[in-house]
Length: 249
Image (cartoon, rainbow, N blue to C red):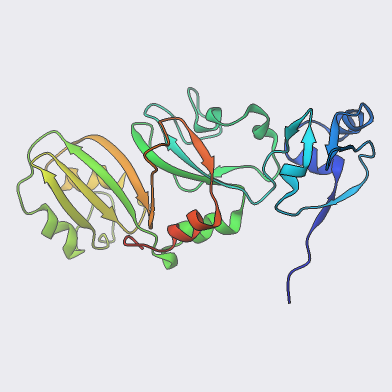
């Protein structure tokens, strides 16, 4: 049996998407600035079915409606940008449309990349999806391109794969991780948990220092080559499926 399609009043929907207050949305409708299937929609009290095709049918000032609640994004995080709502300086949320700051439910990052790490970052307003991705039960791995200050000693791969490495300040050893050496000072590292600054601390534990860090894959989802630094796009069902599948799952 299929699930019933949820519905919502137009003014509440637009307010929740960050377009403005419900009173402002009432005025927007009365002024003929909202159309549905090519016809002016002047009644902001009208309930609309939240079907997947609604953003292409409902136009605000001639532009497609923003994504409905339940959206997931993939973003190429630049260096120097922080995964936070509150910190001073450049934030990942500054890369999204300004009105999206007013969305309810809010869009949040799925985990974090530190300020000096670039690469694939997921964002969503779906709390269930967020927790499913970060839950240890999902076994969603993350792969990083690591650049090091000094050449590797040669035994790092075995140390990481053994699963007994204890990081400073932790009381529980790390899960096994896979290291693919690319050069004496660069490698791909796949980890299966998300401890604080984990990759940097792993290499510090074996006497090295990470000078550059870039995440290129989450689960089986790889950062697209055509997604430039600072750019984002909406994830489709195939992207979400890839997160929970693929060679890194």
